[in-house]
Image (tube, rainbow, N blue to C red; front, side):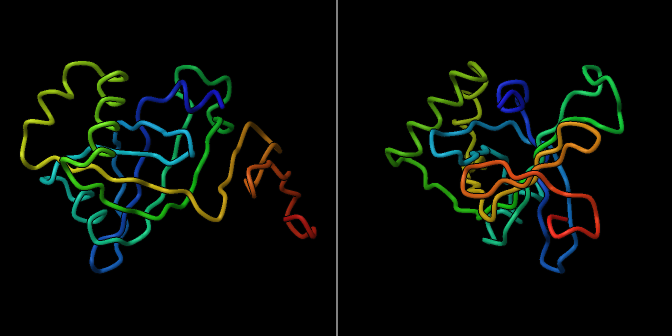
Amino acid sequence: MALHEDCQSLILATLDEAGTPHASPAPYIRDARGDYHVFVSGLSAHTRHLASGRPASVLLIEDEAATAQIFARTRLSQTCRVDEIQPDTAEWTSLLELFELRFGQIIRLLRSLPDFRLFRLQPHNGGRLITGFGRAFDLKDGALHPVGPPNTPEG
C-alpha cells in the first residue's frame, strides 16, 4: 500500500488512565506480518499509555501538500493490540536495525538513551481505508470490502 511507503510517521491515538484520548505522531517501521513498531521516549505521555497495555489506534494519512482534495485525503486507520519488546533481545536488536535502515544514524543515539522503549502495535479487527469520496473500505482477513452508504446492509 502506497501509504506505508509514503508515510514515515503515523498518528498514534492512546488512552490515559482516565480514558482520555491523546494523539501524537511517531516514526514507525512495519514488519512482514503487518505489525507497526514505534521507538518512543519514556518522557512522552503516549509511552506511558502504551506501556499500560491498553489498545491504541494508528492513523496513516496522505500529506496535505500531496492531496488533490483536503476532504478526501487517503488514510488508513487501525486499532491495535500493544506489546512492549524488551531490550537486548534478538527481536529488539533486529527491529532497531530496521529502524536504523529507515531513519539513519539518529537511531544509534536514541538506542543509547535509557528512556527509549520499543512497542509492537498489532492491528486487529481489520481497519478502514479511505481513498476518496465514496471510496471507503473495511479491511477484513487481509482483503478490502467496500463500505456501502449509510442505511444499507453494507454500511
